Image 1 (tube, helix red, strand yellow):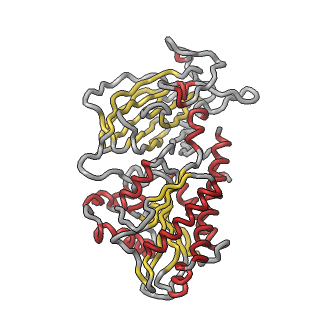
Image 2 (cartoon, rainbow, N blue to C red):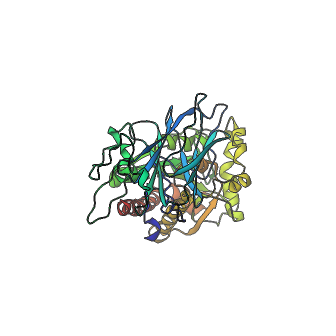
Image 3 (tube, one colour):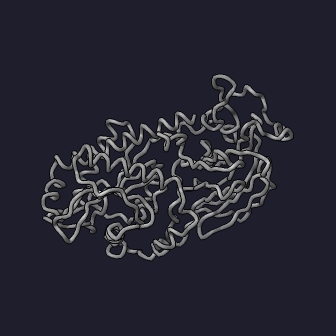
Length: 439
């Protein structure tokens, strides 16, 4: 499938200078929200930005040294020669001293925007560069691999003092490197072509490994209540069934935001997923409406609400903040209109979230035989804080007596869980196939 080609958790950019730009989604790409809450957001400090020539002479690595592991980051292209790298909940160390740019970097600036650090990199216009951001396997640092495309490396920059420029240098495991060796070496392929020089370093982190399942509501927040059922109980039962399927049949790690009847703030659910290194976030819910005849499933991904129905569901789910959370003002910066106008709105996370949402609805309609109310987008708080492809699944309407019985039955919950499981399996297969093709 074309939309998965080169799917290495990346954003592909057009333009001569940054063709093949990849924005790594390793351990949580963020492009759809402004993370963080509380008085001291930026706990991670950037102490240095360093440049090192790759040992194969085909590029440079820009290393951002940090005092701790940044929770999330995003890389995207601004234009043909400019990259913007956002490090969330991060700030500059007081002793930071700027180094001169090297290699394909003409200049770079670092600016603080709220609690996030924005590194803007301007590339030399005469070069074609492939850019990929990822985490260092041996430290908390972030790396930006800048590879020359089409053998366009400037002669003067093919070697540097002390660099290993041997063409036959073998790639080193990411865990064994404390410097740029994870991105400096190439991997031979058949013929004269070489594989992506960062493939070896990122292979172990690039596949779909961890699914985060979020049973909505819980504890003092019952969710929708109708026909003698509480939403919080129904979705928890489905979550456990879904998790069992994924763990036992796909051999993936499953993380739950809650495993029992407890209340968790919406923002904290996404943060938990980020800390766990989640690759896919699935929030489970059940719907309600004033008319008891309304029924069916629907799946949402994060974005601008385009219909009255989507806005109604969004308001219902987001109302948890005012009704049950102790610090609702921390969501003030999540104003929907301000959000969609933000420069971080355009992200490949949106594409992949929509893709998975469509797979879920396809399974519900064709395999589970439920009425599909389609795929929609809306500004759910619970999805804003998850730095990975994320969806919110409405399993059905508790206010419809017949559908309520189905949602409360072991058969109905098993079928719904199996439908989402099949969607995860299809997503995983195409995801990993795209990774293998890109490697």
